Amino acid sequence: MAAKTRTLSLTDRLGARTVAAMMAIVIGAILMFGIGLATARTLLDTAPDTWQSSGLFSH
Image (tube, rainbow, N blue to C red; front, side, top):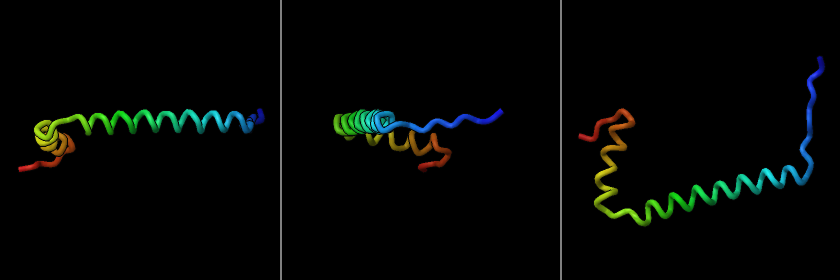
């Protein structure tokens, strides 16, 4: 049985690029607002938790 290959047309490729770009924008906006609206105390509290959850110790 021969494998069927399908080439994407120009509109399919542009659609895939558009979806990827929109997802990148959404993820970037979530990160920017999440970091931008967090208080300094919140960031200081989460830094050791993140460090320790990666398997490393902060103290």
